[in-house]
Image (tube, rainbow, N blue to C red):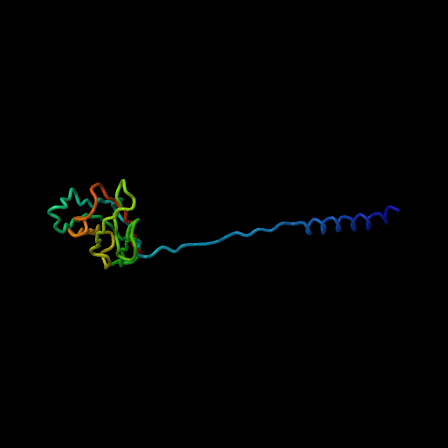
Length: 160
């Protein structure tokens, strides 16, 4: 009888393994990689302030102000090619329709224009470059604005 018990035990063992496989769970793993640009450009300065200052709506001339940021391109390519874009700010109403929002009256806005120079180009690898940000407020826009402080935040992106 001992010899006949072995095949039965083997059969029971195989059935238990097969039953366990029927209840096995599966999952997936997301695999990804990002290949960085050979130019690898980054801003050296984290923030800049483009302040128009105190504006007199009675005089209301057009006001243009500038701010500067620096960036450097490293990596394999020399010279490096770059492109800088902006998101038109938190309160924009369309492409190149920048607006600052009033600090107390959220329905009050003040239009302004925004330009980057140079917004693209080719630069020597490892050399610090200067980006000039120019903003303009038209007198006709702030002449009719309600008094108070207006602000906006614009995000710049440098590629690659």
